[in-house]
Length: 107
Image (cartoon, rainbow, N blue to C red; front, side, top):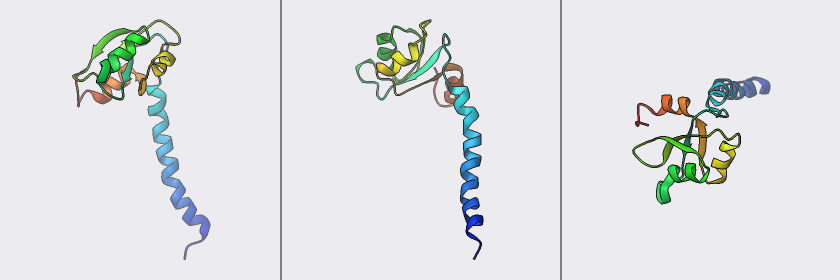
């Protein structure tokens, strides 16, 4: 039977590796003030992500096939907070979202 510290290290190592791989992706996806963002909505009902962007006083740049994802922008420094306040599921940098979603949908 291996020592207890060896089995803990074996369990902890994958968690550390996955965290180190995920951190740069999360940092790259963070929305930046004044830059376009991808707005993800829970559903396409009641206007979906486009309605969320409109309620947040954002300018619609692009929309996907469904109304669950749109690209929007605003010069307001609190735009991301307003999007979440209006019901956005997720708000990420538009360039990162376009790169990740382009094989699956057109934005």
